Length: 400
Image 1 (tube, rainbow, N blue to C red):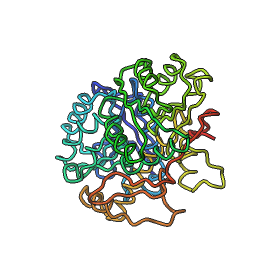
Image 2: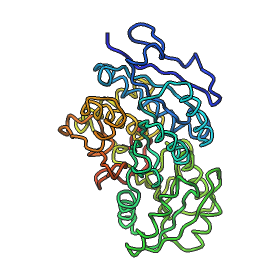
Image 3: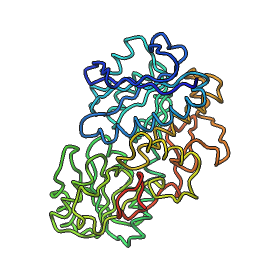
Image 4: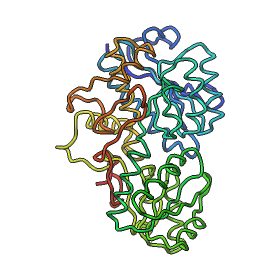
């Protein structure tokens, strides 16, 4: 009998939620008694709180990949199981829950290391010292330090060399000559705050920067300052629940200059803002978030699409499901090529992945996915980004 994914969930205070325990497949072995035959994944990401809209798709993406792997016999014959810790996007809780889990003696084979960069940066020293592989999507540049954090591999693109140049090209095509940037003043927004000024200076486009606090729900004041500065376009970092606040605040001050939400935007803004608030709005996003006709869907993309639908469907954009799905598939590929699930062996394999033919690749987030010994972020090409009109509403996690 083929193994199927098993899921255990913990609350922020580490109380086992038996109602969230999903056990299926052969027999009824517990995690401790079946440890040698399981590939244990620990997901540390918000399942409650303001960023649960990100953390829950991460879980779904992992589950879909785990189901696919288990249907083929698991990772080198080891059944994939997922255990969930919910830090509610709090770095202190993330570290505390992780340490409690590790103190229990069950060392995971793989950790999904956070919803936001602050969580990741708080956990990586612990994970590195224990030689535990981790994957994630958070994008603070400090995370991409293979010497300091040799076991951390992320799907984030390089903000300075990948995402930002694509944003600059998009704004040029919109005819922008004087741009305002609205960006979060925390660790998550730091890559944008650092990358945008030199890139825009090199492009000869003046850039004025205004920050907002992560907890802000009214962006009228910083947007008004940009308006008063005379910018003719705005680009905004709008992760999590921020995008509707930006759009509502823009409408509040009666401003209709072009607004480009950057690739941080994850919310399905339809129904969250009046239709008029979308006038002049476009989204610089990952290409996978653009609708693909059936004829253009790779086997991996179709499997992901079908898998998410089978688990209840899409609540946000495709990339939030694709990243965790694809990274787990890459880790499995690395283990297969290393013929081992040992962290050092898999790490070396991930830094030197042998790529299958395009139609056989188990991922779809980017055209090509892989890492090197000196770079643990994904290199995204021009074709991996798209500029999208946010009308009509999302269909299966994509804009059609």
